[in-house]
Length: 423
Image (tube, rainbow, N blue to C red):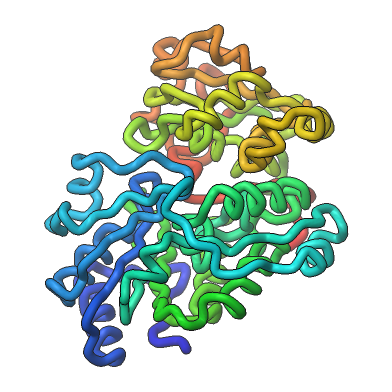
């Protein structure tokens, strides 16, 4: 059921609007005794989910007993990050999702279904796993709050990904990431309907209908001054709210280009991007826009590691970003990759397949570390002086007579050359 739907490419939904929308929607639901909120973590700071979570707490008060950020494989949020993102919401309400230990399997998607959806590229059962708090916590309302935006693993982020990946377990996360990589990232990005989403939808339809999940989905864009604004908000307990949000997100967040880009410069906010696990959005979201033999320069002042999970960090350092056939061969021969398929998927996603070049400019990793994983390296100070984020504007710029395309935050969109994308 769709409880609320509002949005357009030009709409600006203010914080006052959001508070009223939530209050009216929650009133329709009737009395609730125990509420769980599942917002994203700090890596989705710009989603407005922090504000919506704070507003939900203000509405429900002591009945909102737990907040479980959808960490997936990410590290736990710090107290500072919680305060910055969630405002006055009490820190005592926050729980840490442990993707290795705090998991229950609520069902399995049959291998026949997975094989059919992936055109035979993957043939295994997919376990639908969630944090045990969702199942055993006794909640009569679970608020799944987040932003719909183009995504490399599942086409369009959020909806039941927030549940099955954000609060998912090792096997479920590993196998879902691998499905997306095996099927082909460029066949998935920007598409709300794809094999990974269909697998999660099967799980929702068959294994979690008994859970009182309400999805609160935002679409976020930039106004004429560059300020982030909410363009749409959709609230419901089934896929309709996601589909509406995804449709608007393509209008707001997807930039179709008439010609491929020779040089792209991406800035990674140091408060948001500390690993290539996240920072490689600079590659994922621009790969369909970059010309053959083009260059991507990644300004990454906060970069200090490759994977936020220690095991995955070690695997990235060990094998590096190489082409898909090589990674699949290595996975077949090595148990450490075979048992960590999300790492395999990530290494596939981070490869350019030899088509263009990536130069990382890290704040807290050495040249040796960057080159070890098969990226090019350039000194941050030198490159951030030349390509100054404070003076560049999103889109086309001229620097020292050279034409470049600048992106201030790759997490907010998807860019593609028209001939490489057929929606």
